[in-house]
Image (cartoon, each protein chain N blue to C red):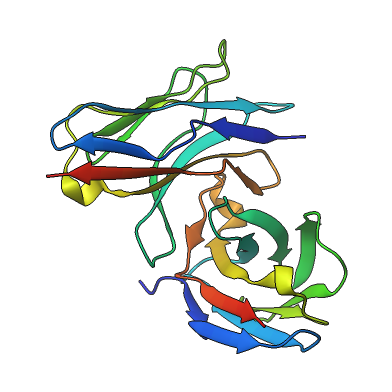
Amino acid sequence: ETGVTQSPTHLIKTRGQQVTLRCSSQSGHNTVSWYQQALGQGPQFIFQYYREEENGRGNFPPRFSGLQFPNYSSELNVNALELDDSALYLCASSSWTSGGSEQFFGPGTRLTVL
Amino acid sequence: GDSVTQMEGPVTLSEEAFLTINCTYTATGYPSLFWYVQYPGEGLQLLLKATKADDKGSNKGFEATYRKETTSFHLEKGSVQVSDSAVYFCALSEYDYKLSFGAGTTVTVRA
């Protein structure tokens, strides 16, 4: 069973640029959630995708957007990067049909905005 | 809204000491409760979970009991090892599967 993978591992961007982060869900999982973890903080929920539709969103501005593909992989896009967007971005997959809410996390993408 | 408050760190212990990390929560319904662990440079790993009141989650010597009357889910381990050094996050999830995390507690175990 393949776990959750994310790419790239690290990324450096400058303010105002755009970035795309990628996530492949664990085999058999149909739901992907994205979290932002600032240094020294707990992860904050950005949004969740289920069957290619956004299924809930946290307190993040519209410049944070996402996609989910038919194979359940997902992208997180951030436009007009700000310095405060520097963080570890975590992707988690789960199975909506499992009846539970256990999420399996990838290793994360470390984004640095200069 | 849902929220989790956990004991602030950092916590420094000697090997074989007893570890407790307090966690309390606020939720509108009956959430599932989790403890996640994050080792240096890595993502989050599920340590244990409990889905209803009085359930006890356990794994790798760690335990936590879902206490609805005190809205708590404290993490305990009787004898820590150096390899338990990590950041521990308490979290909850209601029906929408979104996880709400505490701020994390950094634990350092010295040999």
